[in-house]
Length: 362
Image (cartoon, rainbow, N blue to C red; front, side, top):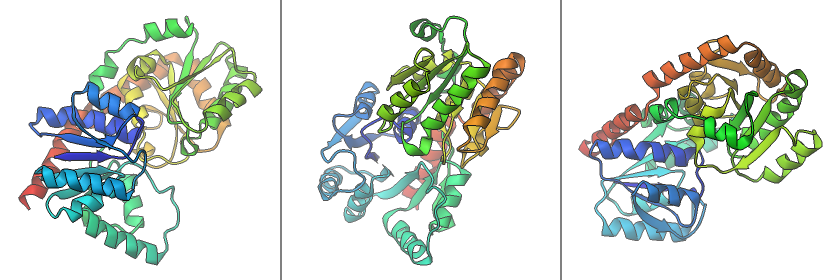
């Protein structure tokens, strides 16, 4: 089978794929991946020794050159399943090839926007023509798809899964030493630096937290178009001594293990993979009550939920956890158990492989 992804960098869809592929291989599914050349995602897939096919059009869901590249690949290889991640070009090429069944994983939300009736009809027709099944990573994503006009019977909910033990067993000691944290509290967020993640809210909350807990260190991990703006905001708020803007890092498990509290300030979110990772590491989380996040974070049990766009509420929740270490530890342990039970990458791979078999046999 062939996965097609249009991402250059390792965002939510890329990390989903990196989590899924080892489980599929263990189940005996022969997998190849077509992705843009020259990005971090290609490097990570190469480290997994995945069979790669390079796409030359870059980070774009659609281009006619990609349609042509994928079509040529499909006519040379006998793929029964084409599984796409945002790649409209991949779905069109698969339909033109008249062979494989087509799966799309929808990783995010449509930001709750209103969809007029004509657009719902068009989306429904396009979904039926271009895909056989759409995987939604959460109930919130499934509802978003239905709101956009996708027929409900075309949707299969398969939650994100992660390598739970990798995060549960990792030590953050080296990262804390690298960052010069010592015994001071470390509060962090791992996210793409894009508007929907609202990293400015995290920085604003950090300034408020600093007033209550001046011993706290803050870390923001990720890259994106807001990076320069965030660096300026950090400097303007006088946070430079306490704030670490780290950019892209491969050692996410160690960074997560180093945290005392993990934060996610998204304005909309399909599920929140980084929250699963933080919970697997036994960390309490503070997150915005949007989209699929509310299916992951159990308030007062595994973390705290706050309104989106409210740095004051974010800061208050973080300070509460920093001031109540025992409660924070109990939330971390409860989150770890929840992820083990419901969000393992083995479960995700098993359910995905079952879907493939159903499509091939149909």
